[in-house]
Length: 364
Ligand code: AHG
Ligand code: MN
Ligand code: MN
Image (cartoon, rainbow, N blue to C red; front, side, top):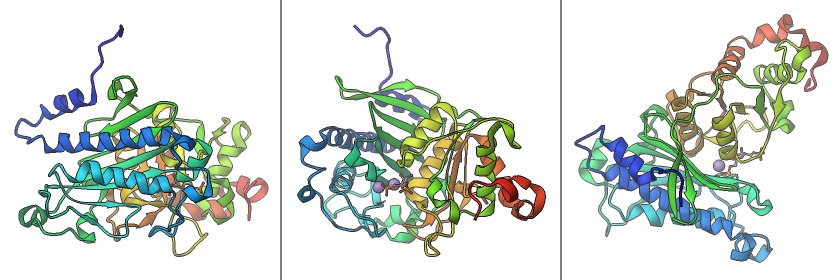
């Protein structure tokens, strides 16, 4: 017998909707469709090699997506689940995905609705083959009014809305347990999939990111490409108790941003995939619309912060569907410190911080 009565995702959404007595219910229905897609992906991922989706070379497709990255078979399957589970409900005007070059049109046989769904169907897919946590990330926007009124096909420009416009954002995590973490603009709630019931149960009603941390995450192999403010920040963390921060730091790198976001939500930390000089054609590694903005909304709703280093992530006006951007998020005081370092990089380069000049582990 269960010892505690828990809310399901459906009950949580009904409670949230009571704040808007005139709401049609479309929004909740769409979120439940997204949750269903995540459950389907969770089951597929859980079968691992037994499902024939990973491992042997003949089971891996070698297509390349618009990002120029190799698509794993599970990337494609996860993308299909998102489309299949959400297109039929009549709630969507269109969708866009990391794995699709162009916006996806809702087929003519299905009614069109007022929302846009934007998603990374499988984040961290380099980790699939090694059985490390991956996840799905999604964002819901309202379609422009003329799209809603006319039911016309969506175009790229319809999706180029700043993150402040997001109606909801969330991610699913396929780890030791499957979780769904969601914000509808009133804080952040975490749900754990009960494998017996097949239901997401509310286990973390009000997730808050601690304002301070001594844990950071960055791919240090890129250090020679970092800009001065990031070098300074990391150098100071590495200097630990003996440096200007006066405390020791710990480092983590999972290479699934969604898993790092979750760790940071649970116990604080800062994640950086900053703009760097590695490839002039790519201003950052991660994508604004389906990675940085949804995670940014979740962080801000949980009392954390998300930034490009130079400006709040959620105020960036997107210029392209698959736009990449430098991303820093997590514990508020650390992100604000990194932003401060970006405002005063020259002070550091000169002689404000002798650590960089004398003892940097990452000195050019
Ligand atoms: P995706 O699998 O959707 O392409 O995203 C992978 C991203 C992100 O999850 C992770 O933080 C980063 O790529 C890993 O980068 P490195 O390869 O530099 O570790
Ligand atoms: Mn991704
Ligand atoms: Mn992906």
